[in-house]
Image 1 (cartoon, rainbow, N blue to C red):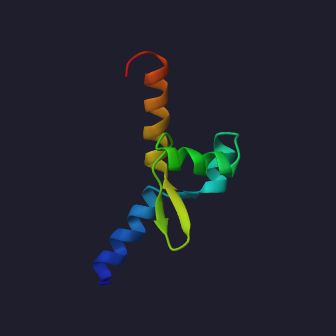
Image 2: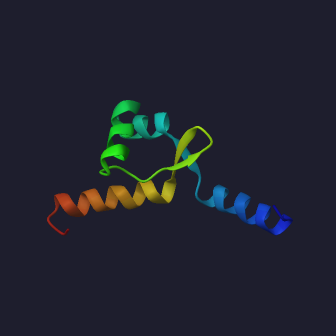
Length: 76
């Protein structure tokens, strides 16, 4: 990876950090298995698999929260 790509990657991660499945579960006060089910069923936030871990960008979690809120308020 070139230096410029490394810099972009580092800046992107700093501005839009990743959360683990366990961190997402704690955020939504549920279990990691529920978060994995949501992802498998296509009803949860989109994750990205890096190695053996599935990670979730902060921007994706916010997008998913706003979509759920709009859906519950009849806007979707």
